[in-house]
Image 1 (cartoon, one colour):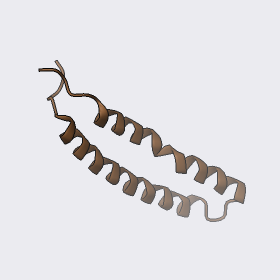
Image 2 (image 1 turned 180 degrees about the horizontal axis):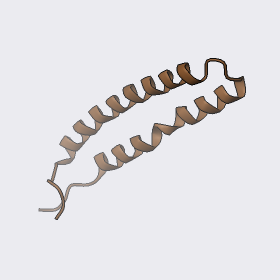
Image 3 (image 1 turned 30 degrees about the horizontal axis):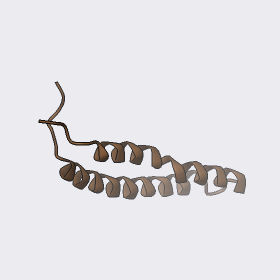
Image 4 (image 1 turned 180 degrees about the vertical axis):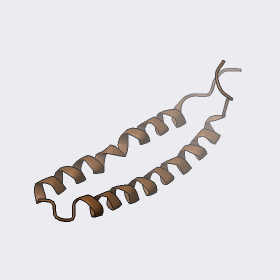
Length: 75
């Protein structure tokens, strides 16, 4: 048995809030990690870290967007 059926409008509202929370928390976590671990690192390590950190948030966001965009179930 599947979970509760949410209309697409409600999923979009919840998903939008989740995306904003994800971006805020993720960006703070990456900045904090960079300040703690990369203070004296070389430019190469910083570049690699920021390249990976800059794109890694996309995967959880894709899951949220996929969930938001699912069509409503037929009654």
